[in-house]
Length: 356
Image 1 (spheres, rainbow, N blue to C red):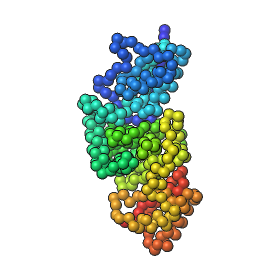
Image 2: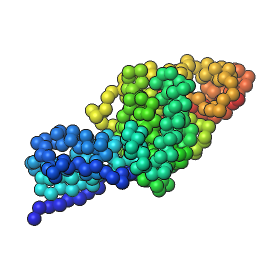
Image 3: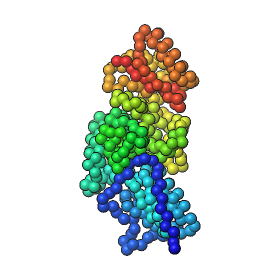
Image 4: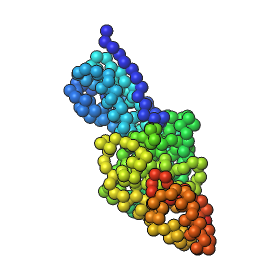
C-alpha cells in the first residue's frame, strides 16, 4: 500500500483566509504534471500560489518525495502568499493545500474587482481603508519615499501591537489591523504590503527571525534601491496613539542585521544607508544641536522624533544619553525633551519626545 502522509507547516500565527470558490491546480482532464526537478516544482507552485489555487498537485520523481515536498513548502512560506501548508504525498504524487493570508486575498481582490464579492465584511472594509489611505497619500506627496513613509505612519497610528495569544480572529488578521485593531508582526507586514502595492511601490514580504523568534517585515524599493521597513518595531508598547518611531524605516542590510536574521539569498540586497530615515531627515552632530532644533519646532500631533546623533554613536547607552541631555538643557536654560529612548542595536539612534 502506498503511504499517505499529512503535516501542517506553520511559519507564524498569521491570518489564514480562504476563497469560497477556489480554482484548482490540476489541469483540465485531471492530468497531474510531472516535474523532473525540485526547481521546476518550485516554479510551478509559485505560479499556482499567485493564482490562489486551492490545491497544488504534481508528480515529483525520485527518492524522499515527502521530505522534498516539506522543504518546498517551507521555501514557499518565505514568499508570504501562504501562511501554512497541508502536505499530502502518495508515492511520487504531491498535493499542497495552502492556507492563504487574508492580506493576499485582499490584494487579489484589488487587482481583480470581480473577486471583491468573495471578501468577508471585515476584509471589504479594510480594503476600502487601504485604498482611501493611498488616495490621500498620493494627493499630498509626490515621491515614493514620502508616500511610503506616510503609509507607514498611517498604519502605526491606527494600530496596536498585541501579543500573539491576544489575537483570536486569525481569518481576518490583516483586515482587523487595518480596521483600527490589534495584530502581530504578520498583520503589520501584510497590511503595509497591501497599501504599498496599491500605491504602485514595489515591495516584498520578508520572513526571518529576531533573537531566534519568527518575525517578518517588508523590503521596499525606494528611489530605485531596496530598503527594509519593519512597521512592528515602529509601534512600541505600551501603545500610544501619538507615538510613532522611525528607527526601522529604510534600513540597509548592515543595520538591520544587528538583530534581524533572514536568508539573504532569497531577497535583493539593501545597500543604501543614505536612505535610512534618521540619516536622511534627522541627523545631528551633538545632542545640543538636536535640542536646539527641537526648540524651533512648532506644535504637532506627533511629538516623538527619531534622530541620529553622532555624539551618541560611541555608545554608553541610556546613562550617556541622559548626561548629554541634562547638559544640553542646562546650557540652553530650558527643558526640551520630555522623555527619550536609546536604540540598543542601532548606534547613535535616539527617540525623543519634544515638549511643546
